[in-house]
Length: 434
Image (tube, rainbow, N blue to C red; front, side):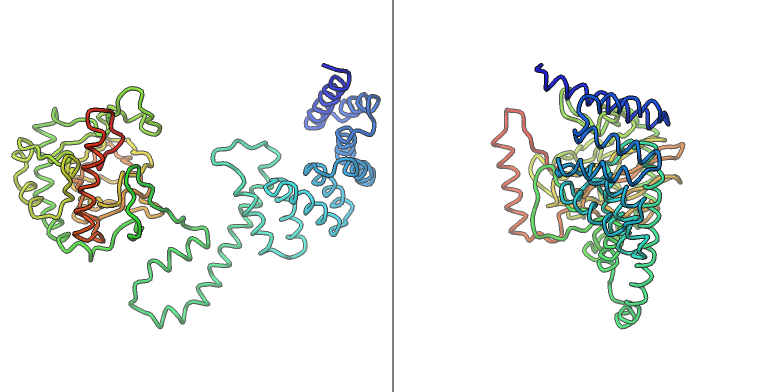
């Protein structure tokens, strides 16, 4: 290490120790360490900044300003220097200079959390609460999920969240008033998509898009739950709930040994979120059809279910679909957020044994299970399920063709999926239709 590098390293060490001393309220110790750094390089931007921060802590904003202006004159590319200068201007009650310094910081680093928080707070003092909420929202968006934040940021971040929440509530009331007459003109119309759109603007709901792990069919609706009118047979399925439940209960009582883990990846697979459930009977399946093949002995154990399935438009792709099974989620178990393989088919859930405390989310919609009320959803949109009760939850799951695929498109999907399967046959195949 040459002399210059050694000096820089020593300066950095002294400044870091001074920062730590200031954070612990040890002002005299911080002043002593800064004096050592000043003895080495009094006009180094890092030393000037450390001295200025110490003066800010000590209440001399005027001297801090002088030191920081000398620092940015040498290094105008440091966002932190400009933020500290903005802080000095704030203490000196110079809002225009503060705003200019913050803009310089954000021009260098647009996602600088402290600069965004301080800009929003400045806007609040100027009575611009709506603009402040927007900037606070930008600040909050820079924080990664699960990040651990230092204690000194807790109060300003809480203030940011409260400001965003107040503004959202105010904007929601404003829009409700503005749209009231328009909604009245369209009473009875289907407005679910409009509601989702507005909720997304307000930050109350997210917009989820399909993310299939295998085949994405473009230009079909990206609905979380599909409207019932596309499945005229759904009431017939729901009407059979009691008989389906009786057959599931018989399976649980007499054929429990035939239940198998639904998640069963081989060793070495990148299972990510499936680690806890892999090869676990906490989420198990009693298959009636599996990857396009009927399990005749299982179907024979569930004759009413088999008879009902024979009348449904199940997805049919040789060696791949349909897959039909009783899904059993154990007590106190959760299926983590995940996506399915293809939106060429959609998934039907028929709730049969559903204790309180069970739930299901697809995208931004969370639904409560109710026996006798089935739903159809796009499983290529992120979804999850949970059972917080003390007993297992049991449902029937099967896949049907996406109703927006024509017969020609279905034929070509069948051929394409089979062709891809044949291409990889005999080797490790990366594809799975269900």
